[in-house]
Length: 139
Image (cartoon, rainbow, N blue to C red; front, side, top):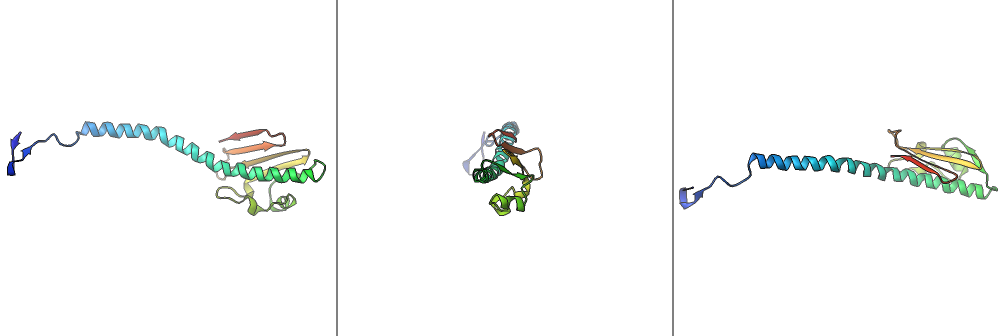
């Protein structure tokens, strides 16, 4: 160490070396590799919860319909506007940020029904519930 101008000591040991910086970058990259997939799975699950809520609304409407008609469900094969009106719902009731009425498929007849909701633009993500309360999902 030598004294420089104005009596200060020139010391080159200030700051980080390139190796130390590379180690920090590697640690951050490893943490990102762990965190990003978890974040994306939580994001998908939160989006699908909107679809599950819509399926619950259809389920409630089906049960209300059946309660007024001796336990018989209407004959349905989709969730279009006419069929939703039969249940007392409108397409607007199922319109959310991620899902619309067109994303729900309702199959019902006599004493059974199945409601399936599929994520728009990704048919691999879906939720299904039937009259017995059996729930299956892929997300």
